[in-house]
Image 1: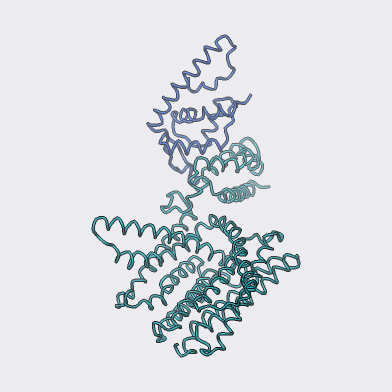
Image 2: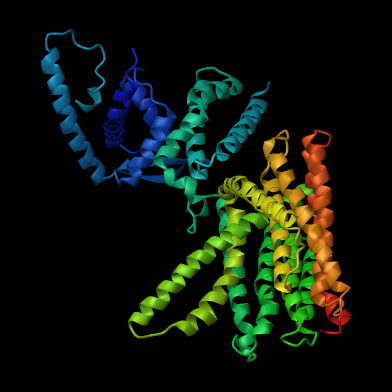
Length: 121
Length: 458
């Protein structure tokens, strides 16, 4: 099963902001983390991730800085800002509403094997 | 393969991949860094999983997805980038290309400031616009074009020999414009004022093709540069006009009349600086106007062809030779120059590998009708030269131009015809036009240098 594109796009922002609340991170690690959290079900492309990170930066939800790791390689790290935390809280309220409503509708169905929103609680 | 060899090869592949990424205008060096880091992360992981660096690279690139998709997404987020190649403030994260364009910007600003300042230098020696209009008419291009040439020569890293030739010829131009004692109302002043800009512009061309002046492609690039420079210059002139109008009217509204400032500072200095800025714009942002050139030629070639044919039909219909005043003869010369410009412009915008099409036939019609008009004008001029007044600088210059244009147009027509019949490649036409550039230069210099003494400063 693959998650539909629209749903991936809609959940991308809270997903990235959520991961960044765990600590600053960089593109490749964020992608790995998403893969890990979703058990490989969420297929994110670089074309989705990096422009999204740049947009979040433009909106002030994250900050970035180039840091040297292991001597030679420079890497761009992203860090969530207070504005980003507020945005995440707001998105989380919305998602809770949506998820809550869906759970009400589906309360008698078998639970999902993987909960893509597990990371958000 | 040794591990070391594999690592080296991987670095080479990553380098190639990076070049490939950087060719995309949507992606900037900092994005390439970020994506490269991603790719390396992916490769490292695959190598840890047991793949060779070579295999890991292929798999990682494949996983990354097509660059087209990535670029499209980047373009969506950074739509301003497609317009932002002219960044006036450098991106702090940018690398070599960014530093280069910033250096270009500073060189351009320096040259533009120099051009603007040189307009005002004569005033320090008491030569103001009002007192000595003819001095400014003769020297107008001498204020701006050396700076434009300097900027281009700097960009091309021209060899010292080329720079020396340029400097010597510009100095010669300055001597030709000012050393002869010409009366302000003499014909020679007018003739010089027309020909010196042409001679100097071709010097700019020499600066432009400094790295390879023998190459026909480079000369064609210069023709393209000329057309695009002209468009940018006109656009800036329009903008400058709007600015001047606003300045004048807003200041007038509060009781200050800035006429002196506008006519003695803003317009002349602005025009000189704009000549340099236009050159920089073409160099920095070529691709935007490239899209306009084909449109303009497609638009105006049919219109000019129709106008010329209508005129020829009218000449035959009324069986009336061209019998007009001197000013009108100049008008015909100008018309022919415009036709030639249109021809050059469309040649420079044309894909040299495309097969002959209907548009080439239309161009042939344009050239042939221009040729017919040229013959009519030539007949009229020769008729005049044999009259009582004999040859004057004006008539001799016009005669020379018409002969030069006649030769060019005749051979162009022949080449176009054979090209349309698929006997010669388009390159022949290109070579003919680019090879002809020195003829214009030679003639312009002859008129500027030799004519005044030849006609005893008439």
